[in-house]
Length: 307
Image 1: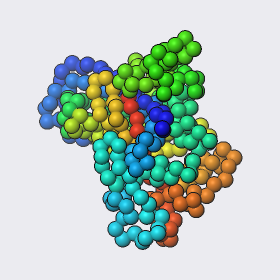
Image 2: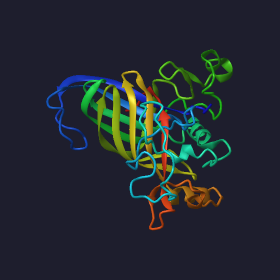
Image 3: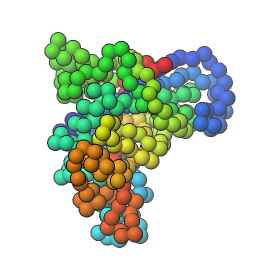
């Protein structure tokens, strides 16, 4: 069973009722609807792979269920697509998770790397949502992404808070740095209501809430920091949203091969990802060589405090 690794945090401020005069990104106002709530999220937990082998977190990035129209058979884009375990959508591109024989990072895989990064506080990403009028249907919200650092009590040491622990074990004296999340139904190294400070702006993007799910597109999202940095590009973020947090979230986008190979080089390793057959997006003139890797992750969210 794949180990769930991440959460995202969310803070709710109840603001005085006022007329929305427009979004921070310059988008149109909500046609005079009263702005009542601001929700701030910080990504702090991911799951790389669902339990079923034919399922994959993510979205359709190449507009095809299977090999795109016009792409040659046997080319780098000719890879099987998955089905979202959350929405049931077909054509999900997630080569990073689908290639179970290829591990991008360390012996513990990407799941382990993400868990360690979040537990140490190295990579925490805030998602501040403004102009929220309705958690079920709101056609116009603004989503601001930022890197953040924990203030006050820091996240628990790596490996302390097992995502598989039951509630009693999570809150035991031996794991006193851990917190149980009723929203997520699992143990976490980050407590609901924990305070964070913004350390870097990642941009503000238009979004919407449809059928209780938040939808937005983003430019870049750092998943792993330090010398072995991995960045998700051209992505989308969706999740079931409420005043209590986000569950059943999905992140999707692509990793650039050159960036991943550079990360390995900084870590003292040499890899040729193009030759491995892992890359499946942005084909070169030679259709057997692609310059990007499709990726998707599941996530969940908890309340947090972000000034």
